[in-house]
Image (tube, rainbow, N blue to C red; front, side):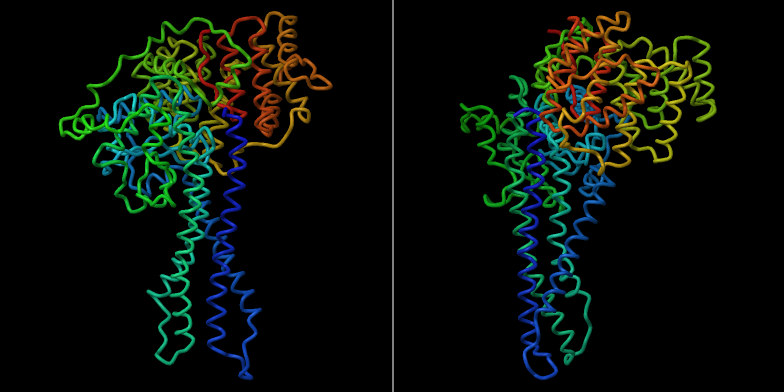
Length: 635
């Protein structure tokens, strides 16, 4: 199943989740109505001594129950949407990995997360650690990739090798890429709504009402509250059943998505074996573990088979290694459980250097859609090499909330001294002289980077930007726009950086409004398709209009639209027009997005080579369509 099939399945899963939720709500309403009906009949409160008319009471009871469940679910979802993955991580007591951490294992985790993010083509998430948890576990949470959080336990850091840790992190990134995070947070909100009646009944029993012995009304309220509390176990039953049905299949898919070649198989399978063999396993000690059980890498609670949110460990291992024999773990378990065990002793050699990977790449159009959202071993190695080649001083700046903005400003400084002075003057106006001096000091080091390293470095800065207040983010975008406009022209890199930052910051500020998958067809959006292919063809062949037209034709032919889109040489306002086109194309159905990606790749590959500008523009377009693109590789 490729990325686009998974996106289509995400829509079906959301519809199935809503159906399960409605069935659970209907069962709870029916049970509460039955309790109220029995209580009303038993009370026999009609003035004439006859039976009470139950219909009005049941109608009002049903409306009240539905309102309480609906409002509680919406409230919980809104809170989670506003806080993103950070809210979930903090509820469990996780702590943020600081930018200047001296903890070797924190640094290893941060490097692994950044490398996997570069390999997947998504923004780098914030990184949290559950320091008090000795078991091996992890989860990803958030409404969009831009506001995602990856959290791992201390046990995972202490017991996993780098490859195993990368396998676990890749498993969690699969949840980010496949839209599982958004589904998981909505599931948390819905289940909270299902359970809220029991919580209310518990409060009533503890704090009121305070009537006397003869207060029949108070007694009836207490009886109803007690009955609703008992019926609350219906909510617990349905909540666990829904989580189990939604989660199990997704965990198997995430395992397989994290496995691309031998190294990933060994990594994810090795981590699962340690979950099976280590004494601490994957259990969490935190009391809130039950609420997030469906989001975890391993079973953090210990449900029975009916409510299990994860397939059995042996089944997961055998899917990855069919010849696996549990008896193989006996000697390994003794070594892994020893107090002096060091996973670092089992580390493998690093990947090839980035310098060996900077040759021009070629692009196979049919393969681009297949790699979107599904990085393979070569992408992981390329990302690791690119990351390792980034100077530590620039990485430190990207990870520091106080200096990340300076790094982005420095990426936009122009080589021409006169324009650069104008840009620095604008930074002085907006942020002060000290910030301008910091930007000027970063610029020489940034100018030495290979162009392919610039956007990944900007992505590493995103977690730092997320810690800025909303007014600061707005001011940052305003200053970035002014720096881009300082020389009166718009370079491709400037457009790509601005486009990605605006989109990602927008999703940070308004995560719940971000699109998951649309319903439009390519035939409905021929004009935006034509404009996007035209811009990509133009910047791939800026000095040859005829070659640009041929590149456009190569892409348009892949789509077989009738009438075919027309080549439109970009005008001065190409950036704003492309923004509008990409906004429309993001509403395409997953299958149509896959076809469009093939057309984009055919446009870029028409001349047999891929320039850095083409690669950056292709990456920005794909990101705008929510189709994350791994690094382009040499053939």
